[in-house]
Image 1 (cartoon, chains in turn red, cyan):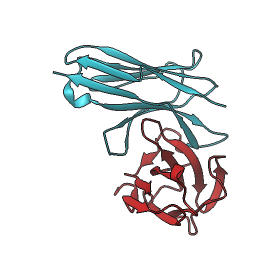
Image 2: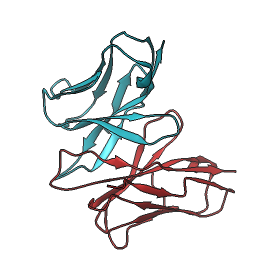
Image 3: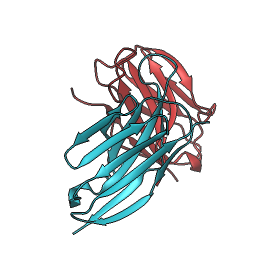
Length: 116
Length: 114
């Protein structure tokens, strides 16, 4: 169990640029989740995948945001035309499912995005 | 819309004292999680509570779930400095099967003073 891995750890970019984050889940986990956390708040759900299928998207996920998990393994989250309000920690989590209801989601260390 | 409220949001306590953090939620759910987050770090799973009346203990921390009252508690016994962190409760919203999306409270920032 090598844990959930996220890359990069930090990203600083200018407003209007596009950014892409990567998440590698725990290998036997078929569910993958993206959350966003701002300072002093709990994480907010963005979207989740079961294998390669994106099963739910939050209304927080505007059309500038897109997430993919093309082969059911790693996932990418892209933000186009970044805005100041996109500055946050982007967390990825993974879990087994749907028959492992007694196990938590395991979180990665996150990617901290700062928009200049 | 599901709301998850934690209180207190800030807790400063002395080593050796006991205290309880409360987590109320606004809709039916029978799965609740407690996580710990250290500054600049990710979330570490502490407890998974799966049914009404569930109680789990690990070291100085004990969590319980009352689904009828829509309330979970995290009790700290004889606090030590190493417990200083932010604690989140999260309620699992699912339609079928395993974990789907979690709705988190705002967190309780715990500081344990010598």
